[in-house]
Length: 245
Length: 234
Image (cartoon, rainbow over all chains, first blue to last red; front, side, top):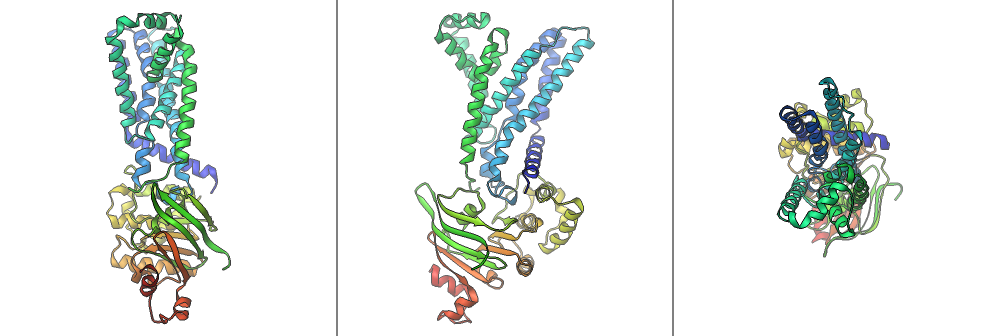
């Protein structure tokens, strides 16, 4: 069977699952509501800031339930997935979901920019920040994919959200001892390696943190972590066996 | 034996400390219906799963010499987000079938496996066990496989469907196809099988043509597959 036919089948399968999950529609709608609320209650600039900070979460939510539940369901033990084709399907899901989330984000960003122009707010669109947001988004997909090789259903996303909430709470309660870190995040000047390392750890958990200009260079860290997560996930899936339901 | 459809040599597979298959050596002749027999836990399903690539083998060689392989699992499971029609279309896409050809094959195959094609518009996961099995047959046969592998071919099927599925195996053989059936229901499979393979405690302990074996053994030609099974599998 030509690889092209199998790729078309795998993409169609991934799309049918994504469509059935409805996250592809609900998450952007929720983001749109937040952005509209910010625009109405504050300003276009605030709304755009909200959008640019939050849209990487579209990638995270689309990355729910990618691998383990399907591998254990028994549904991959069919003629469609013979000769190890189930591995190719599971590996394709990350790039496919990243492409879907990027397309949705791009449409929203373009719409918001055009709406701003229409409302007489001709400020230059923050394309660089949007591009780096895509990097953060793809990192979320890679992280969600890696976690879903171990965690079932949507618990891969839940774990990330809970860890982020816990990290933010911890940061709030230890604010006074972290003045150096906060200052460095604002200025981009790092007093020592420990502070830089502390921020890198925080960015690995909350990649949205790097989406302010002094922190843009940390996107390189996200790119490296994304590559590592994809390679790790690939090695797990290549050794994966289908479990009996 | 010339030109087998499937050849398995020295296959072994463990799950942790459990040695599910210790040594499976067998050949499935082209143009035959072969019964793959063994008691519960003998390693039949694991062997098939290794042959089909669902689990990785620890050792051994699997050589599939058929160009198109069809598979019908014991208890088919389908994604809850797919309709029967989606599965049929995806399978047709994989086999590069035209829309007309797909329609023709569905019209031919659905009655043969007693599948009501009206079900295709419903989610396959919601079908009854019997209808899921029938859909699995439809999908397995849609690509006109020259090797059809079926795990427990008659489970969940009603008697009319069992009768017609048996006839289907014979028809596949008559047009040169090969069928490998892993089953406990010896009486059902005996009526159609040419060859048998017996696996016991993870080791293939016997393989032969049924008629030849019965003639040559002291069981006598009137003895059935069940006697062969008890002879080797105890």
